[in-house]
Amino acid sequence: MTGWDIDPAGVYSVLSKTGAAAKDLSDAGSAMQGNLEEAASAAGTLTDQYGPYTSTAGLVGSALAQFAKHWNRDLLYIAKRTSKSLNGADQATRHYVHGSIEQAVNAQQEAAKEPKVDLPGKGETGRGTEGR
Image 1 (cartoon, one colour):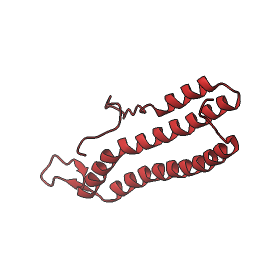
Image 2: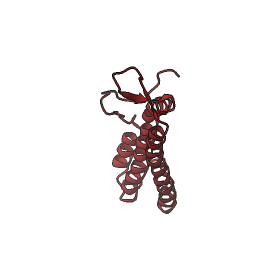
Image 3: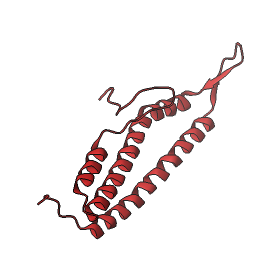
Image 4: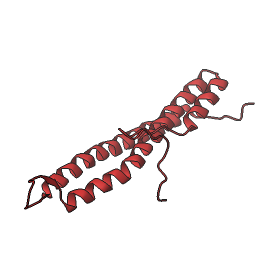
């Protein structure tokens, strides 16, 4: 006895609903990034009146950039963790249905591993924990 008792139809029903919710979350995250950039741009810039006449992000734009910088890592982590979990549950269930319990266990263990999150230019991996 393996200790596994899976209802494949139930698993696929939950995966379908969870996948739809994950897509909605992804769409909201993408929209948020665009909205933050647009808001930062619309908030104006600071210009040195004495020259050289260069503009830098204004206070609101800077605050929005800091907000995005702080939360991007966690949002990417959530997306990758969700994807690994959904794919792992799908693969494990498929192996279970075909009687490949060892492969199902391997798929489950692989899905449980910490996702790698690389931000452009950072070269960092894993979940951000600084300041928490």
